[in-house]
Image (cartoon, rainbow, N blue to C red; front, side, top):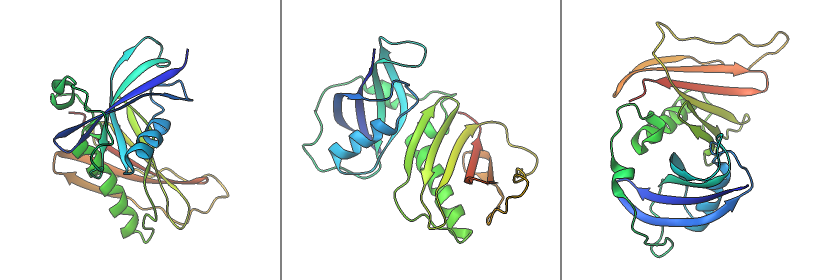
Length: 209
């Protein structure tokens, strides 16, 4: 069995309509890059998957027909979405333990933090940020820079007492190894930037809400 997808699309507080159903070539539910690529192509604006809403069929984290909540990061032109009525409470209902990157405002904050951190380090983002994966334990994003791509990983965890930086592999000489720590507006957030031999990874951890 393969994975087919329907996207319920919002922009801020507004429900805009539905894209799909459509087929994707990766079976795993957490692999949302092909979903983002398809919806972005239909709407002509940048989008991001916030979370999985429900699955019909499939199992074990793959296959079946998957419905996602997708946020349009810019307002698309009218007439591009199917005006299908949906259960609005599934989109707007608040869940205490929902991960920050599964909420539109939390996702925008995380991407903004990553862009600001890179710019402050002299390595600004040079193109659109691409979402690779999202699930209840983490979100994974790819940020292009003129010094190579950077990976942003968001995770829910308690903040450490101080920033952590992983040591580079023996023989490697990473050019960039920033660290930062701050109190976020929505609670304590640890923002740890780690240098890797194969590139750079930003890791942002915040309490799930």
